[in-house]
Image 1 (cartoon, rainbow, N blue to C red):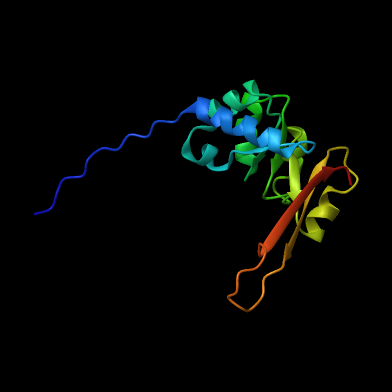
Image 2 (image 1 turned 60 degrees about the vertical axis):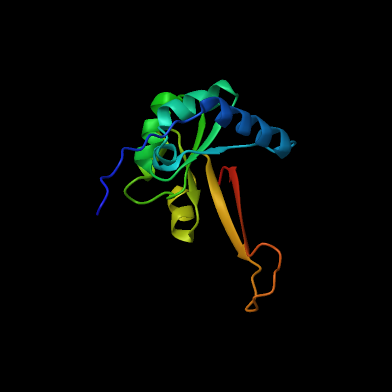
Length: 149
């Protein structure tokens, strides 16, 4: 006999999120720590998550798209916002207007963004995996650095 679905409830502990951010920020020193809040902060609500992280001192965020950057900019007007999809022909002007930093991962995007006054991030990926199934060091590393080009 099939059972009827039961409603599910998700409780988000923003205090735990804040503690986790503080821990990561301390471990990252002397480097900086950023928050990835793409996909509506992974379904938790970007507005409330970003506001809580801002209270903890987070000033650098990553999102996936221009639309997400625009939503986040309304909540965090002074934050650094980097956009994973990069500087597409259809989004570059709007990214510059809201002072979001595209994560540039192709030569085409770099050429499109070059010479502008706005900053950007560049992404470099390297794989150290092998064909064997033996345990090795991590298979890939992605490094993003933010600057002017």
